[in-house]
Amino acid sequence: MASESSLPKILIVDDEEAILETMTFTFMGEYEVFTTADPRRALDLLDENAPVAVLITDQRMPHMTGVELLEAVYTQHPETVRIMLTGFADSDATIQAINAGHAYAYISKPWEPEELKGVVRRAAELHALSLENRRLVLDLQHANSIMQAVMDKLEVGAIAVDREGLVRAANAPARAYLQLDDDPRGRKIDDLLANSDSGHLVETVRKLADESGGGFEEMDLEAGGSGRRVRISVQPLVDPQGLSLGRVVRFKEISHEPLRRTFEEIIDELMGDGDGFRVRVESVLERLGALMVEVDASGVASPNMAELAEVISRAQTAMQGWLDVDESLQREDYPDAQLLRDRMLLANKRWPRPSAFPVRIQALARRVEDYYESGENPRERTL
Image (cartoon, rainbow, N blue to C red; front, side, top):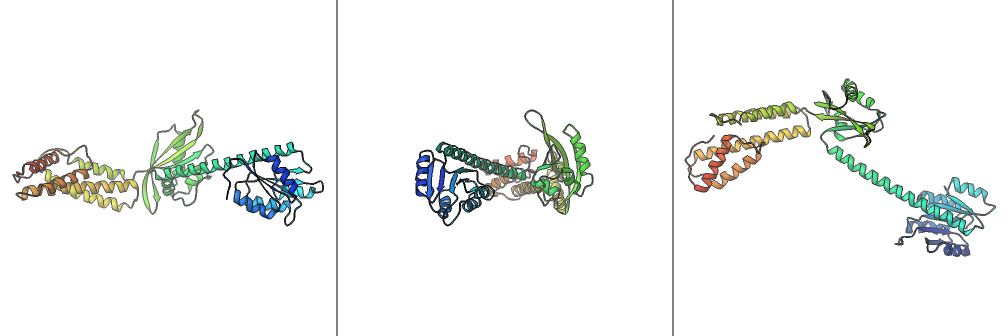
């Protein structure tokens, strides 16, 4: 079981009990000290008490040499800082320890206690710094993963490019527009764009990059077997001091915009008052049905196109609901008032312009409320 002490941990391996006792006395109070005379047991102690900051081992021991132990520790616990104790006749072992065991330092026997304490202190500080660096790297990787996930949720494609023209980030929509299967980071933006189906994309981005920002170009790109109309813009990236960091190339899918304008024009036909409103509603329903066919036939599976299909469907539901309510009030002497009220509320909720209802629809809503409260129905059409 791992210890809960807050002191740095050191492990001392030596087959001489006197040395283990001396070192324990030397380091007690400043470190949590573990000792063993068996180098094979040392690996278990490292596993059981990780993270161990410093390992100090003798070279000449039964069953396993210090160099062999250092090699094993480097493989299994590379963050543990390794120190070798050597005698005058161990020069070859010292070289091996540094090369194969990646020893941080070696201490010659006999050692000066203060010298040894200084080496161990610096080794423990190095270990703490290594752990902190690893934590910071993991935090940065986690933050980058979150940022990438956020970028991928954006509807606008974005490619971040540094001052040297290398791609540093690209979100999912951008990769889809350019049909990129591999990670584009580290590649030249010109090489990346040159592989697209549009031969003018490189020139377009270069032209926009030379401008001060705010300009855009529209062009067709092939993505996923269907053509998309895309608005391309380039925005500079600067640090708080105003120094250039690079630029962001943005791709906004606008295939839906002509169809969206058509939708708004169709809905506008209902906003004015006048005779023949019911006929206009029926005509608008027919035109919206045709528009939905165009949306489905576009083959563009983008969030904007999906949103347009949804808003068309909502408008159709609203208008059909209004027609049904108006028909019930004209056809029946005493239609179900609660049902009419619920259907009117549902239809109004589906209307795509919740702050602007046609005048006749406002009148129909008042008619339903009056009937709900009074029970009187003159059986006349409102639309």
